[in-house]
Picture 1 (cartoon, helix red, strand yellow):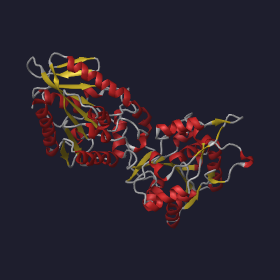
Picture 2: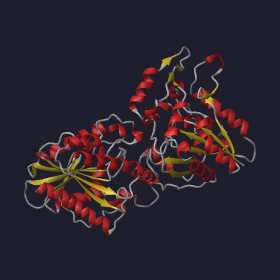
Picture 3: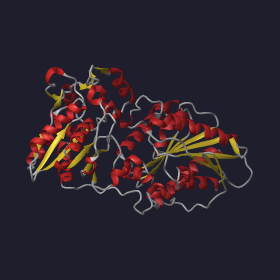
Picture 4: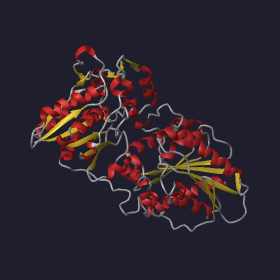
Length: 508
């Protein structure tokens, strides 16, 4: 018999699992929902501070009561709940058949749960609210979110009004010690089979994870191990409330070892971002200075220039670096063959917290390019890709007179729910109304991930509202990174159209 032990996330308790647990039970499984101390369970004897170790003990008690020969225990941790799940599984690794990470982070030894809180302002609030007790365990509580504050903790996509009302009404304060006490792991849990359930309205899906593994993100290498599988649910951060039956089905499949497996980066295949560009573009003379490459057209100039800004985050260790990736060099050669300087560069977007320094890198590179005598400093276009999209806000909000066009391929155009950058200035949707007549060329992938597609749709809606000068070029069958993933005739035509649109604005 499969035994599911379900551990809820911050501010919530066993009540959130009601419908999912009922479905699992109806299918013949045994289900236990853990009442964490202070979050549906009684406070500790003596009223002592509640910390992560308290919650680990809560989970251990349920494991020990359920563990019997022949029973496969599947531990499910949602959101914060993955921290006590991992702490308990590390101490009972031989009793656990599988761990399910339900739209959660990947906690590491020595790191407190507060590090996984998506909103930076919330992380700072937790630190400010912490008060040390006499024994060194932080005391106090973090008040649960008001009804309109839940998106700061995760996407509420898919939740009905009634579900959101219930989530708010039954929420409990989160003991600060549970967020601030570091998780301690011996390493035993690393051998337990694991499944990630990705809620794609709140974060990346399987395809995007594969791209991140291929790029070489060190923290994600373990996700491509044979013991790890994945499922996707097209919903927000609380699937047990938005799609409880679908979640129960996924958990049942996960328990039997089902799911998608990622391919290791060193599996002997060419990763998607290093496959050939979809156009056969002749090489051009190239000059490299610092973090910037110039792909040069014929003649002395001065020529207009197109600066191509890669996405990310890209780990600092990634080789080759983005300015040598086929997509960037392919576009740079394409525009150079048509009379414009094609510029590729490396910037330091290594994490979603790095947009400040990445934007500064881009601005510095643009000024160096404009100072080159072979470049017409009054005719420059900026072309952004993927996770470089938020940097467009810097140029949309106050476009200089020499900026003739901003282009963006499959861009992220508003901070994603899990980034914690809601109040950031790197929010192109909010900046667009100040762009005036600046031409914007948007290359939209028809098979984009749900979370990114939502930001693009928001941008298009805002463009219509404020009368922005927006041209959309659709690639209906294209995926994120279609230039190397989907070399179809339709995709090739879209690239030709996009390059033509940008160059027309530069040369007009």
